[in-house]
Amino acid sequence: MTVLELRDVHRVHGSGETAVNALDGVSLMVEPGELVAVMGPSGSGKSTLLNLAGGLDSPTSGQVLVDGTSLQSLSRKQLAAWRRKRIGYVFQDLNLIASLTAAENVALPLDLDGVRKSRRQAEHALSEVDLDGYADRFPDEMSGGQQQRVAIARALIGERRLVLADEPTGALDSRTGETVLRLLRSKVDAGAAAVLVTHDARHAAWADRVVFLRDGVVVDVSQRDQPEELLSTP
Amino acid sequence: MSVKHGLLALLERGPMYGYQLRAAFDSATGGTWPLNIGQVYTTLSRLERDDLVAALPENEGQRPYEITATGRAELKKWFASPVKRGDRPRDEVAIKLALAITTPGVDVAKVVMTQRTATMRTLQEYTRLKTEPGDLPWLLVLDAMIFLAEAELRWLDHCEASLVRYEPRPVPETTDVEVPR
Image 1 (cartoon, rainbow over the protein chains, first blue to last red):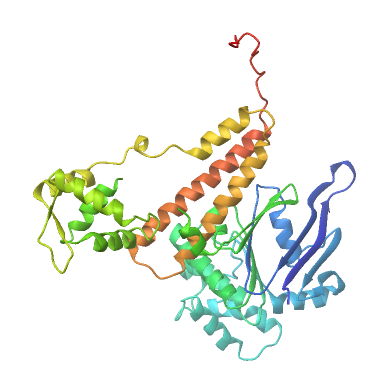
Image 2: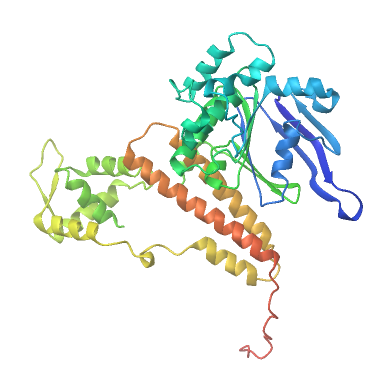
């Protein structure tokens, strides 16, 4: 089943003469096991697209569906619960809570839903991002790369089917950034769907599909070929 | 780089015959620069003529070659010298784009976009190859191709942004040119 679907989505900021078409009729489908990167210059609508996909913003017209359910059909409370259970976010600014340990940060979405044994799940999620033994450290006791991995563990914990990432490698050095992308890639290969917003082509290249946005419109899509085809080209 | 120096470097590991050299070359370059066996033998005979390698006695129908002292000196010189930019092939993409701008009736933005899609796809393939296990030499060759593709994409973005502001200069009058009849 398609995890994320945008159907002819428009988002207008402001009104009258100052109205800006942040998204101007974008349609996009993301399937399980698929990583889609969104590229484009500043102001092209990348972040608007991600906010709409995550239910943090509503379209002016058109529909956003996650697992077949239209986000606009949910009440605010339902939407909040839906987001916690199904959608994971990784942002450039990590949004880790400084007074909580790594495990507490990761377990937070589960705790809010009253899930039992959240600590065990959090430790498992941390070990998946190679942070065994870091459960009781506070964010300021970890490096930038380690904090970013905590944020990823938090985004992937539970039964999240959709991961939304906005410049997740942020200020990380190129090797640590690559580790983050490898993690995202392996999660997607294990069946999740993800949308990655980035301005960096080398990061976008980890995706199965790269969507180029210009002025709120999809202008181009690049899809991966099979490696064999590439290498047989003289 | 030439095949010549590639073969000399491989022979520095120890004597090899043609097919072994081709396999070692393929493995070192991750199959991105396929050599045919004819090229290997032609290069070997030139290297032998220039006293850079020497043929050893045949062994089970195969003739191994070894690097000579002169060959070793040449190899050392090669590693010690930088590769000059002028030694690399011309950038066809840059030339094509320059011509697209000055050729009437060409949709330059479309040329940029078509190239970008193709280069992005190539970058995606290279990146996919990185997820497979590989030795460091091969991974570094792969990274080199990745960084070059990335540079081309950045340059294409730059071209696109520059084209938005571009106002072509008036085309020089061509009527002054005498056309031979």
